[in-house]
Image (cartoon, rainbow, N blue to C red):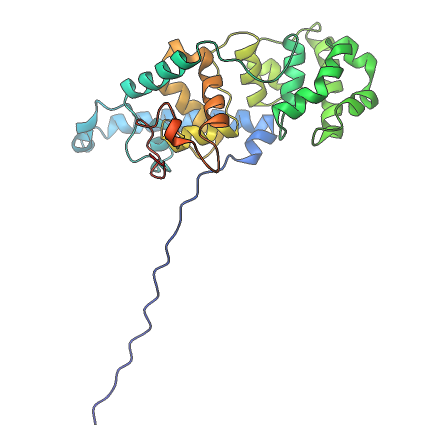
Length: 297
Ligand code: SF4
């Protein structure tokens, strides 16, 4: 009688669907963590550069494609880009922004404000809220309080009443009063023009600093919100797992001449064309350049 040998059951292969990276909440939530994360990432980039130099010989074979712009962030993290299989060339990035500029030469932010101070307050209020929702609340608030002194005179309770339609309004009202007080005591009532100064204010983090520095003071900063994060990853222009990685990646690849408006072009592109659920690829200005495997053109 022959023996029947039983084989162990073969495990069925399960298809793993990659999801788009989501911005880390902690980065947006804690300004101190943001600063230390930025420093760590920069250190990692520097360390990577020096390691590359010493390992030059072994890297010769992989250096054939040196004409392509480096995907420095993805490589610095030692991981492949989440979506893009092929990095954008400098010429492609230039072409994309030239098209954005042609279509909308002077893009504007959608947060209503009257001066740098009201812009700062609007950005602080916009965390986890829509620009339209913030504008609805701030129109009446800024009509009577458009300076730190007037906001302090109004008081936390009344500020709370004005902004109660915005999420997390209790905490935000507290921050608006605290930042107004700090501006008066430490900055002579003016919004500071430095990242460190803005990030030292209650409720203000890296994204707030980037928006204020760009919109109020014309600095070439890149604020990464949910739209910019999605566009940077989907298109493959600046893939990254955190807003900071995407921010630094975009800063590296976008030519200086586009940096003043780049933040707005990318936000508007993400908000009105490269929508989260149903991107409008058929009417997308950069659909031939986009690397997203799931684009519908
Ligand atoms: S082609 Fe589609 S996925 Fe790519 S950027 Fe345009 S809208 Fe977004």
